[in-house]
Length: 211
Image (cartoon, rainbow, N blue to C red; front, side, top):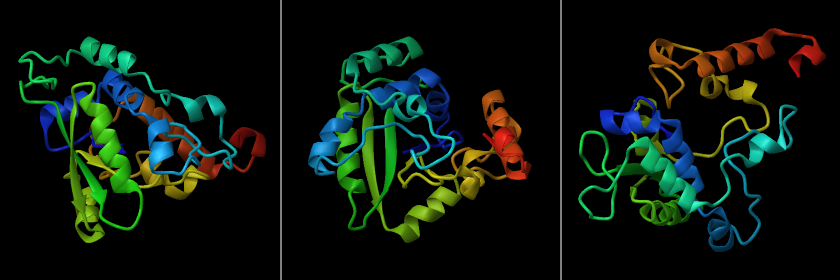
């Protein structure tokens, strides 16, 4: 699930840039339930990370933020300042609007839509309303490329070799990556550091230095 750091809603954009919000959204997902209902028990539960086939793989990064802990998720959102002040069961963003997230997901014969239905249920338990926006690919991809989405659902790109998808993993142009189109202007220090590492990996020929 790609969160749009430069999305069209300023208050939601602010929430997505808060580390505690991102951690909370991940801890609130019951991946084992998704595993049993959607993946026939075959899912290897993890977070957003490189796969074991990558030379850069570490199990610590692979499992990070992937445990199901709704209590921790609720606490993190409280600490981030996103509270349910009107008692309707949903938290409010900084501008007073309901904490709604539009989830762009493909309408194709795959498990994405089923997975997102479950995730929306999980997020409802922590006071965040996930609204599914099922789209054909011909409509989904232009919204991705134009930065018009809140959350874009797509397979992990470059899980074995991030250098094959450096436009997703680093700041490589003035209009990317697609989830942070203004990164060249407003990218965080950690993202610039990651970008420099990606660029160094693309140019070095020393295997020891590459690792």
